Amino acid sequence: MGWKNSNLRTEMTRLLRRAGVSGWPRLFHSMRASRQTELRREFPLHVVCSWLSNSPRIAQQSYLLVTEDDFAKAAGVAKVMVAVNRR
Image (cartoon, rainbow, N blue to C red):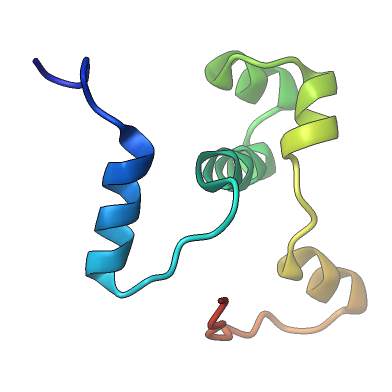
């Protein structure tokens, strides 16, 4: 049957649990937002929006994020990798 009778959120939650990672609210929205933000750093907004099937207005309102790297760059601080345990 493939993905036709599949609950993607249930399967993703199961995979996260198996990996020892706790889930977070709005799982798929958060993943889409982080990916749209990453792609936007390298490609023009209209291109990324075409790939992800949304408009620049929706992308800016709902998906594009301000990251720790943005704050570090603004402050002139070197990038530091920090492990974060979110619960």
